[in-house]
Length: 102
Image (tube, rainbow, N blue to C red; front, side):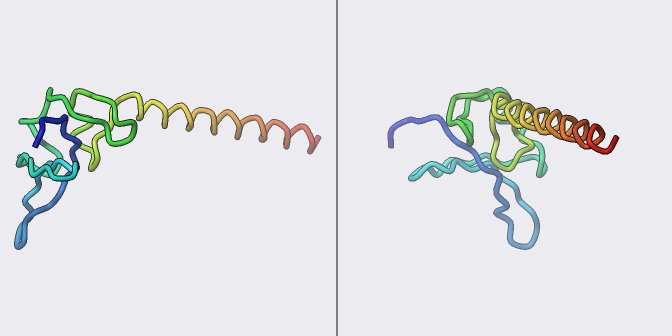
């Protein structure tokens, strides 16, 4: 198989007890890395991987490795920006309601 950049997903492969791994989800790839705990994969920190949302390359950091399907900081920021816009829209409509009730 040709070399590629892995796209990871956290999976429990244990039967009687929890054994967590970060597994590449690309077709035909059997690569996986054991995790120290469910939320800690020190062997992958600083490695290059593919974002699960935008499919761009990213460097795995502590934040990304705590996710079931790691994504880059740009994708997380996009979610935060949407929440800020929703908050400003709520404030706008509350102001309209207060103006109408007077």
